[in-house]
Amino acid sequence: MANDGNRVNPINYLIIHHSAGPAFSEGSDREVADWYSSVGKGRGYKNYAHSYHYDPRTGKETFAQAHYALHRYSGDKNKYGWRLVLLIRDPELNVSWGAGNWPVNQHGINIEICGDYSYKTIDPKALLLITDSFIYLDKRLGGNLLIRGHKEVSQTGTACPGKIQTQMPILKDMFNNRSKYENLLVPPVVVPPPPPVPPVKTDAEKLKELQDIFDAYKNEKELIISDLEGKFASAKIVLGFTGDDVEFIDFLKSVKLKVDAYDKWTGWAKQLGNGILAIISNIKNRKNGTK
Image (cartoon, rainbow, N blue to C red):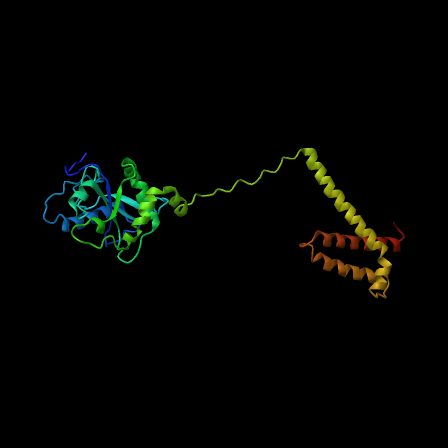
């Protein structure tokens, strides 16, 4: 394990920064880490040949001035929509130079939020990710972790972390009321119950059900035919039809065609059409002297 020899325990500060640089939305860990190392080498380490800090992915020396960088990322479908990238290996053993206050750095963990938040606040889910990642430190200290914006601890003067500073009370409250913010920001997925399983019918029950349907249809059809036959003569009068039975049969056939046009909407129309055909057949049979 790498150890720069500067750490002083306990680790009781969590310092929040914004980079005022690229947001690295959906960027890779490598891209984020390389940028912070390059910027750090040109700033805090510009007069130093070595940092004695190492990239956790490559093992190469890094000049990043924070332990972690936070950026938007959903590639792994995490519930926050943000990713925390480790910039310096063994952060609890190594001191980063981000706070502008050496004693605070020695006792602290520095977190850079990627992007410029000079005039905007950050997604509360990003703060929730910070809470979930470092609440273990707060528990280790019995609830006494000091969560600060960079400007609160800097001895050199800074506006960092921009408008995120106004959200520091929310971040502190998240550490104390974790479940309240979890339910608010990441509600649990409610899985609907499966549809009720219909009872399994026996063969006898299925047969009876089919028989009942058949009987009902048969009875309805017979009633329709009987009713139409009984009213055949009166129908001619009601309709003012003066022709003979053959002409009335032709009229009924035209009615049958109109009824058939409604078959796709109603089974009753089909039955009515069948009833008309039955009447026509009975009339013809009577005229031919058959039954």
